[in-house]
Amino acid sequence: MSGSKYTFSRRTLLKGMTALAGAYAAPSLLTGFRIANAAYQTTMPDLPPDFGKGKSVAIIGAGVAGLTAAYKLANAGFKVAVLEADDRYGGRSLTARPENTQYKEWWFSQYPDANLFPEMYADSYQERSESPASDLQTCTFMDKEWKSSGYQGDPVELFLNAGPGRIPSNHVNLIALCQEIGVDLETYIFQSMSNLMQSPTYNNGKPAPMGDVTYNLYGEMAEMMYTAIQEGCMLQGKTLSTDEKKQLENLYQLFGDLSENGQFEGSTRGGYEKIPGGWNDGGKTRSQISLDDILASQFIGDADANPELSPGSFLFNNFNIDWQPTLMQPVGGMDRIWQQLLLQKVPTSALHETINSYRDGAQSDTRVGDLVTLGLAAEFIDVGKDSVSLKFLVGFPDYSPKIEKLDFDFCISTIAPSLLKKILGEQNLPSEFILGLGNFSKTGEWGANDPTPNLWTPAIKVGWQGTERFWETEDEIYGGISWTTDDIGQIWYPSEDFTAHTGILTGAYNRGGKAAEYAQQNNQKRLETARKGLALLHPGDADKVDHGMSIAWQYMPHQVGGWASDTALENPEVYKQITTFAKDSRFYCAGDTWSYLPGWQEGAVASAYCAINAIARTIDPTNNAFSASACFAGSK
Image (cartoon, rainbow, N blue to C red):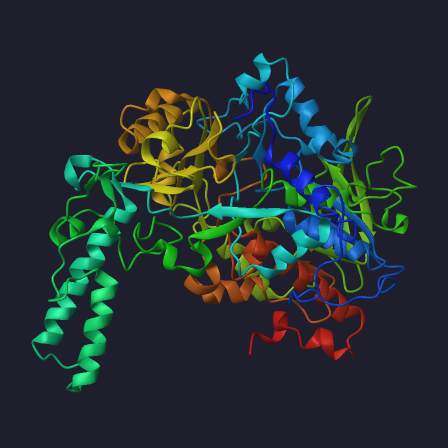
């Protein structure tokens, strides 16, 4: 083992491997850009570079949907202005990073051109004044070993994905976009059989490895089915032939690790209580768990519950296509997606002459970030037959704020329906659409003190820095999620930098009613609750975390909650209302709320493509490629 005092990050190693491979034809996604693989079947309409020449688009919100739309429209010849009410980019994609000056300098040195828009680095955030936790929270994560070395080499990269944290393999629009704009993806582990489950009704509250419970559940179920076959039970209303009976017996033996006579007796497949070693050290296998104990454990979940509002089944969540055991994440944090969108080059003609913020060099080297103005809130949107008028508040250091008004050919709003309702004029818009915004604005479902609209989901997270990676050394956990019925709901373990000396845990993640209750605590109480919950899953390790942060999305500025509550499936009539636009309208909406994938960035990107497609259809109604889009016609 090297005695070097310097450390090397995954990024350094990836760069080195790329250089060794001589990858000059395809530059590293960490340092360059490349065209999206044509094999990706995305829903982005094919627009020529001059399609939108002479047309202007206002986009409300600089989250993933807004920036994606800005990037694509600017490259199609449109003049684009993005208004963001907040003082940061990203919307609900927020990644908190250390405030330490040396760490910031290191970070900006790793990402080419990131210093063009320094506000992309988020080291603090603050919930609204009415929040029980309205104090400013500053990220104090720090690699102490790197600091003590005099900041030599690379630190462990430390960040908390306070918003989205994973990408499923079937989210092809998002994956293709990442490939196109230069965002490198790596494995995110959703489930490891070493992850833990805990509830007060199982084994006196002691945590159990997921693999142990799963193995015993499958074994017990297989033994019952094997016995049923032996006793001559019919299958699907018919008597089994001898061959069918043997096939099923073989299936159950393999599925449940049964003996030759169909008994579940346990084996090394279930794991070890004490790991075997050399010579005479055979280890000790885990004890069997009865089916009665598993059924009483609360690990199975409620089949009638909405998984968007409840933890779902601890044991079977990974059967969901969006929660496969292995997913993906951007190298370096989820904010790398919208950060790279900001850095994309676009034609200078995309700059709006009045509303865009000006950066030195923007005229000669125009980027998507130059189309965005932070801290600029739309005050009123008036949709006309041939244009959209926007009123917004402009403030200057030496002058009183004043209302300005500008006209655009089109407008795309990406803000939540209840926020949009407050600033949108009803003229020239379908009454059904207005009704849908109203339905999305009703509150009270989550309690008198929680502001989340009824059709949205409250969500809360807590982040910790581990003083050591005790989950790896003590529990053999490398990535994945542990689950508990406690208020914290889940603990996420980092899927990167295995065996390093520190790392960031998502120390709590809950949604629905429990998240609404949890959010009523101040920040200190939230962290105390999270520390107690951690102790349930990792007894004796509660003091091995520090630098805690919490975030309740229903209280964040210009946000109303975590995500819309699976509206398309749970409230199809309301979803139909908010996706009802006039065929030749000048106003459209995007964002994950306007998709079948609420809470996912894929929904944000796919809906942005639908809004672009709708604008294209309005401009060129004779083009069947636009009119036949699934955004309008539905999937076939």
